[in-house]
Image (cartoon, rainbow, N blue to C red; front, side, top):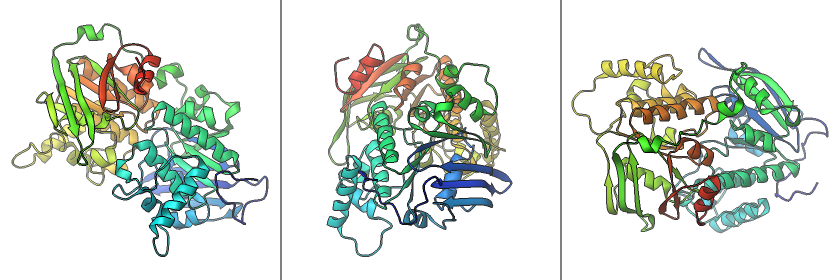
Length: 502
């Protein structure tokens, strides 16, 4: 078979009809927690295999077993028809298995070519490394500048770098963990089209996702995990989103899937009920350390009791705008007016919102970090954290639970609850449902609505345009560092995101 993506087929490939990868009765425990409980899965060559499940269902843990990051307590891994257990990611890569993690593993201060070359052997030749990246990216149809520093790239380009890093090792099986979680709609469509082409070239993809529409759009086969067990394996053509949702939740839902997956639109009179302006920018600009103006004379207002949405394609300056609003950056020019009590939920909770190896009660102390004086009131923090866990339905044994052990959905609910704990006058939220299943997404979105009802001015950016439109009373669009309020339907906002007339 011809290989337009430039990936090689090792001589040890499985005979026709034998699955490329088989996971048989995999069990894995972490202390008393059984993360995988007899999970099984089979991936056919030339297919996209979607792996679904709630947060904490064991999806990523199962794929970490495949990629050599974890050793199963019991069960078998068969690669190309032969029982194997890879001792490390390097071993998995050498045998044709690559994995792109939800939280990227790139070194920000290094170039694309340097990142792709990491893990190699011998003398590093910058020109040869750049040529390799250019060749692999061109064959795969992925646009990427080998000389660009990773910390200057938008998230979509960083993801392409992770994929090229795997393709440069000639992988046949590519594991993608929540690949569309932080992509704009157009970028997500482009990525899924590439996934389809990669599989059609004789390779295979395991797509870990919470988005049923992504699974139904591109997958050939679907496996659903629930509490570490495989509860459903089916051809995508033989199932429905409702059946998949029931399998993911382990129960029959009483509400239609559309309600479970997408929050109800806001009422039309909310902005009329909104109160005074509590958060604003007035001709605010921000210039980064390289002299690039990321935000250009932005003017906006958020009132008490309303949700203001920010829509933008990646790299348009929205991340800097949110940090100007939240007080994490100060304007290079113009003014920012902020209330005394303001909360901020960044999109990367691992890097910017949590101390992963610290207990939850210590993480709760990060609220208003830098403003405390005197001795820490640890007993009080334990008590308030216990209340927070109950109020925001954070599934954790108690305040002393280490943050790293929580599922992504529970981590996000904890961070949001922490920022809402003292009834802030304003709340700035970045990609609130990144990497969350629809049940956790609904809970987080309801918390934002509850904050609005309590009189908080909420500003929310999401790479999922539908989420912005379902939450927001008013929408601002950011394009090339410039901010404009846009009234209209999804098409009008989408055109404005791309620089067209609204």
